[in-house]
Length: 341
Ligand code: SF4
Ligand code: SF4
Image 1 (cartoon, rainbow, N blue to C red):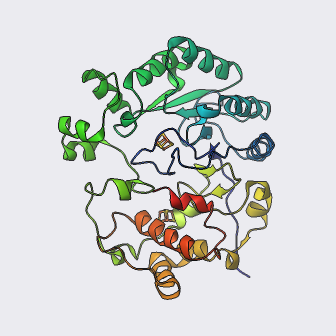
Image 2: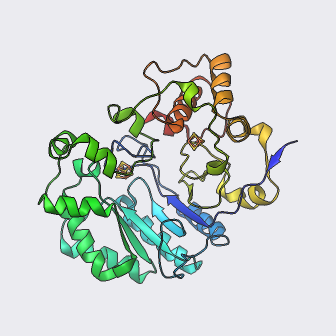
Image 3: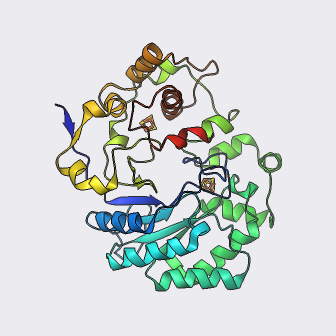
């Protein structure tokens, strides 16, 4: 029996829910108001943080400092949609002495100074080390820039160097444009050429981007990506994700689950029987050509006429069709992930 030991994760994003007030065109996790509003239960939150506390490592700058690929971050969806749960999570993480914690937000809730200061201050007092504020033209379609500005101004005072603005270049650019409100992407594209936009925006070519930003990228036939390997992404110990259903997901590979976080000791120490995880086994050891072959021969997968922008586009598109046709592959989880393009 072929077994694979999953490495113990030293940094993790905890998805409290996929539910979001926005539906950004580049979202890697398909956040949407149309997702089931399932949130991690308090029991699972406790169990997950207790398990992760044994492996999470602090930022190279120290346990009270933050960096993107160390420590633990609370994410979604939009975590502030359930502020009570977020607060509980921060309290528990502190109790379990998890270092380098931060929360990621789209700032939809930063409607005035009072509430913004109150919540960030409270989170800090409960032990949160830092904040990541997202700024990009996709979120600007939904979130008035004045809210983002307010959050950054207040977090600068409260969290100082532990405020991460992602991506800071947009913050400066939006300020120079004197934006205050929301702005549709098409209007933004009238101010900045698509070429400039593509050069400056950092987008992982996965999730919703390949389907919503169709005119942005060159496309290639499936065979162009056949030789690509996914072992480095699938078997890595940094920046993994755990979701509200308990799925332990490798890297940024949403919709793929190694198993449940409650079984992390088994996954890491005893190893996983790869015969029970055929899709993951294929992706690690054989590559996208074999995944494509399996999907085409057994499930009638048809290549997209327009082609694919990346290996992750091809991989997700195949998995999406597999989920529609069969429930045989338990690692394609949560299944709802495949229905929010
Ligand atoms: S990128 Fe963030 S704000 Fe936008 S849909 Fe995804 S989770 Fe929501
Ligand atoms: S191709 Fe699939 S498995 Fe490989 S990195 Fe992309 S999403 Fe993950």
